[in-house]
Length: 287
Image (cartoon, rainbow, N blue to C red; front, side, top):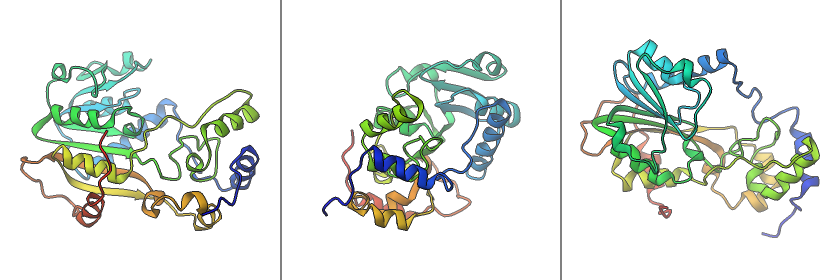
């Protein structure tokens, strides 16, 4: 298909002005202590509907400031280890009392030092992991024989995956524009260069292929579907038409994983095996 647009700064600014009154994320999350505590409670409430949290030895991969770890210990009686690739100021106040927060990279460091876990959690972190397959291998090593892992990750082709939705209001900017145009946009608007957030390019099919290859069975598997802006898609189909609509309209993968030989637990809702089997018929290359 012949390109119908010049994907330059002028078009970028035009689209941002057009979508300023109807941004793809109307209320971006904030990072004050109360908001972080509320977000931790909300996330764990959703997980609690899928797996039992009480009294578990838990690992959170990508623990950030540590609020989820603290809540797991205080409200669910868990022994918690939280790992991240950098230290946060809040660690000093939130660690202790059954919470151990430490710098650790599950894709590269010695995971044996952590032991094994009944439950492994990760929230909106995997898209930022440079070696996501190796990190999933780390999950397999760290997960106890009858343990469960809950993975919640942003999918690259979703409309918000640029992670710049506080400043950029239209969908799929990272698929339409180069990093150089992102840099020009920020130079124009805030006076210095900034780019789309670094995220890996994993799709739903990649995750499902990785799970299968590592013999991590999805006991629950579903995808968060966003509103599909059909009008926007039609305007820029010369670029967006290269991607499956499933990928363009789904933002997050949610998976509860177990070892293949672990005893199944009856899920509260059926695993979407149809979606999984369709995705597994693809064969993206592991890396």
